[in-house]
Length: 352
Image 1 (cartoon, rainbow, N blue to C red):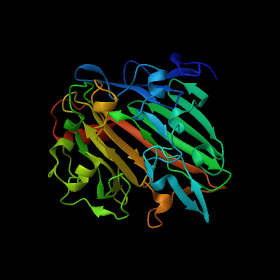
Image 2 (cartoon, rainbow, N blue to C red):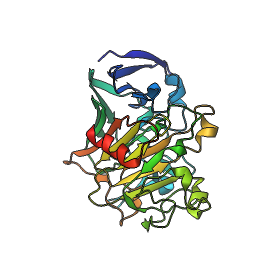
Image 3 (cartoon, rainbow, N blue to C red):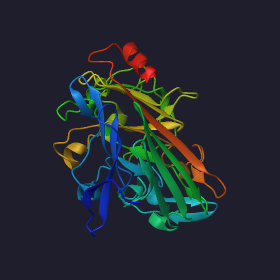
Image 4 (tube, rainbow, N blue to C red):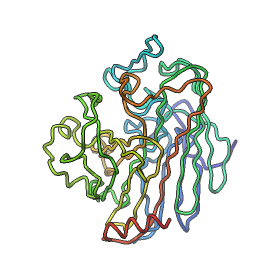
């Protein structure tokens, strides 16, 4: 299917196109067929239309992006230790693309592939990708469809996938949010609330140690809204080992939402809803080196547990033939105004 606007070419000459959802009056998005990348997301705030996500100039910049800006992540989001796992008694060696570990689906992953556009309308974009058996070392052929839907002040994303052999599968989405829309405003100045009562401590390679630790009394307690920059103890060993926030938060059972974020600078607020059991929080601290000048954003990635294929105690993350995988992520936006009390922010989001 054709459509969209030209967005440059990859190194091999493959053309990439950008598809617009929404209109100039409210929420609008621009999504690439390359990696399903959310390249732009605008919403009216106190200073007019505001871009809420970090982005790059063209297709080639995204092709060589080490930060995974805006991509659909798969087959497996986050990390798999040793770039290997054993499944039904057979050992599979995956692509090692972060030292000896596997990160965000491998060297190319879903985010570096050009997806087929199944359908495009003002409020919808459906993308499809066929991942052949052996790609990045994964067993089985995987058919995955990712559908963006924009309705009013809501942007939804749904993954649907099937396979012909058991395979690790944990897709997620990787936009960097700075609701201020200004690279000079620290991403850590946003107010964040996450209904998570546990988190996964990690080792020096950011691989989970295998335990779920309580957030109470730690810098990972966002059950009451606060800014990430206001960590109770910035010298916490887990913040030191990761260089900041790069940890999986375990959502409370029956959580009403996955996260809420608010910028007192723009007056814009966001709520994330998802059926995933966990949320990766990444503070974007590597962006200062990877993309100087674009500022920082917070990654809030609904997902399963990292390294679950190697951790029997973690929730299962294997997709098997005959099963249809579905994961839902929805972003809801409101403009309650600058310097609002948190209860006003929540009320505004609840009305969207």
